[in-house]
Image (cartoon, rainbow, N blue to C red; front, side):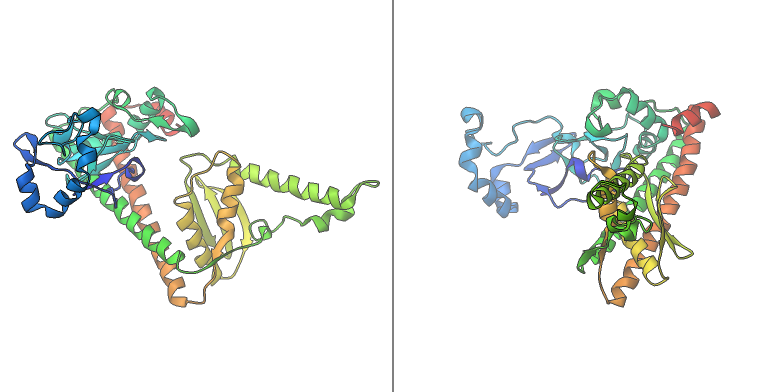
Length: 379
């Protein structure tokens, strides 16, 4: 049994983590793999053999009886069987940009459905290739040559990956850059695990929706607008419509800052809660005490980390996410949530610094001018 990685589990610079496994009745023999014979399967892997025997009739009947022989449990397709237990890069088949992860333990298996594997050319350090493909230049090129899909996603197939520019570098530079890429994957994976612990704690208490005026303190209720209604109209209906119009305007302003790759962050400073999109404030003016502020900001950051703006009314979706806050008197839980969120934020900052330095090295290898760098960084 081997861990089987799907497209949703293949994330940039993160060691894949899956609870799906594949029964792979093959063993390596030199440069190839061979089907394990039935006698050895039965003796060495009795549970696997019992599972296969329980499906023997269906397996033999595949392709109109084409598998009705002594090797009835073999796979229907044999390509790439010898490329599963080797070190490789993994990329989801549909991505918003070029993003790969390294199977550093050579233990992850792929079924080539919604996920693909990438192998380096002979003599090229796979960590170096990971750094280059995850770098801004390859991402910029990829998003201009790959087949576009819905919601600003692209197909990450061989025909769009093979032409990506890999800069020349001496062996020492390749090894050094490759080591940095491996360190980055360790940091990204560690942060993933911290975020998992954080979300586990957030799910340990019931949650309630805060009122809309918690997110928008200056948003006046419909009843507060009735006196502004023009003469001769239904004041209640006019006030309700005015309230809805302003709310939609606020949702639209938030939505204008959202995109599939947006970096969202909640901050609590000097008694004010704010939400940033790519460093720019999109929600502010929420003033609360120093006890609730860090706890709410920690919850928001945990949820913002996995938020993907939907196509339909993304501003409303983000606000609804922020309104949902847990209710607990468990001080230990509150302290742990705040501490874990600080831990992930610290690792996130270290990742940002390391990636910035790595990108500078890659820009240098490509020999780009300042104007070309700005063009790439502007997307």
